[in-house]
Image (cartoon, rainbow, N blue to C red):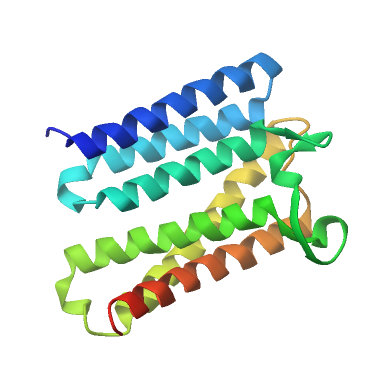
Length: 197
């Protein structure tokens, strides 16, 4: 398997920011994000092993890479005595952990919208029989929500195993799940609209 130029470009970009943030997290002793870097390395390997079989379009690979960058920046860029993940982008409603709209929530919506797109692509590519039914639109959204719940389990493991994480409490977890679902549903609506469905 020989990666294309576009695939090498995404890989090089991803490797570059992972190395920069990895060095930064090591220098400040941020074990939480080193754990996430290891998880991300596993995801990169999974995508890499399936490049030819899955025929991922370059736009999807870039979207996945940018999600990784947004995640690393969220935990590594200092903002106002905390990190970018805690930053309020637009104060729509709520206070404390119930504040909407934070950078964290936007990254969750984007990331699991991208996950829904990836699952949609895999279904469309591997199961052409579902192209004209509702399954192609509903299953990727539900699958992305399930993977979003798995992400919360990874965060929970980080909380159990690493002191002083920036994961947040119950309300943060609940809002993460809501934004995961919102991003997944929005991605399917956009893909359905683009395909004239």
